Image (cartoon, rainbow, N blue to C red; front, top):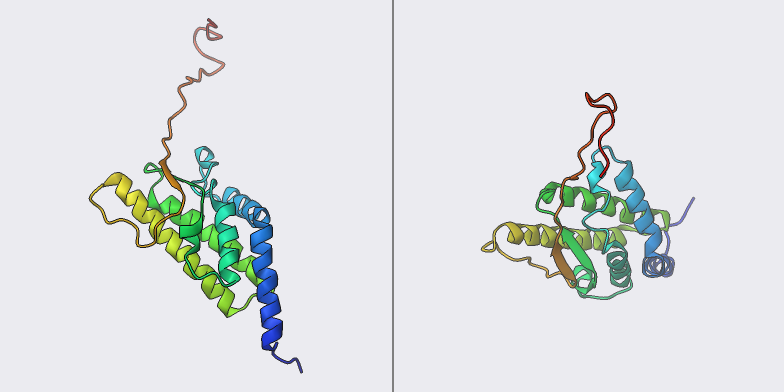
Length: 179
């Protein structure tokens, strides 16, 4: 019969998880990017995610939270958040949902328990709420600001359609003129 791990074992596992998040956030970020790109919902123009500039820094701060830091990891994250009004809140929710899955999966693989999962979920919830509130403020300056402030730089990401006009090879006049 297997015994439940004692407090020392849980503490050791939590320390391993926190150290992994702090020292190797790029591994979880790479998993997040692969997950995002593999989903059928990502449009070709959306290869660069709104969270791409901050995911490693945020994961590192979540690691500090798992190590006992009390303040919000979202407020400590020093990175660039690109918000796209064209993509809207749905795209933000999708990116954060994929990040949450990756963080929780990594936690489970490395032996994290309910306490770690609760901390991860709280950190992601704060980040989602803040990012969506910031997006709302881009659309309407009178909207309420985020409850938990973001510690980095927020920029509006403009997406332009391609200006290149494609001519089918069987066009009426043959090849397009080159100038």
